[in-house]
Image (tube, rainbow, N blue to C red; front, side, top):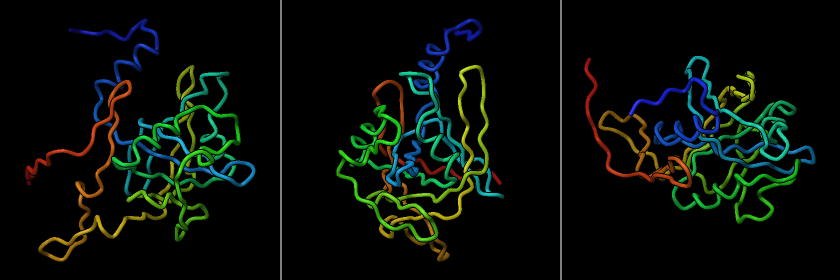
Length: 205
């Protein structure tokens, strides 16, 4: 099958991309609302992009109700800091629930059993039960396309990793155990993928 995107409705293109670019990591982003409580939302068009400076990027669409900017983008632009979490299997349901569209300034944390913890070096807290979290500050926002999509670039100032997912290799170097992190990956529609078999294939020198 050959699928050409020219002239195709962007919604149909999205439907194809989300089912073929798989699995995708999910950025579970915490930002600060105007009244000082917190917004929490998942984004699966997300990746680290550079290590010098350490940057990550995620893409934010518009609200389906009225086409306005989503709260995550508004909050980050206004206050400059955010926290990106990597959710694991037990948090997949809560993560999906935070995709619900709420009125601006209403916190997703109000109706969910999610606890916060201080995040050293960050003005914002992190989700206590996430095993990986990145403390970020706004680096740049780019508007792409007629939609448009907001590409949010964050400078990573620090990373929290739960002690139980860390190990050391035979040379004493710190390693992170992917199976212990047990991240949730995004597929298409309502589907997610959990951590499975690990293939270890040495890269050519």
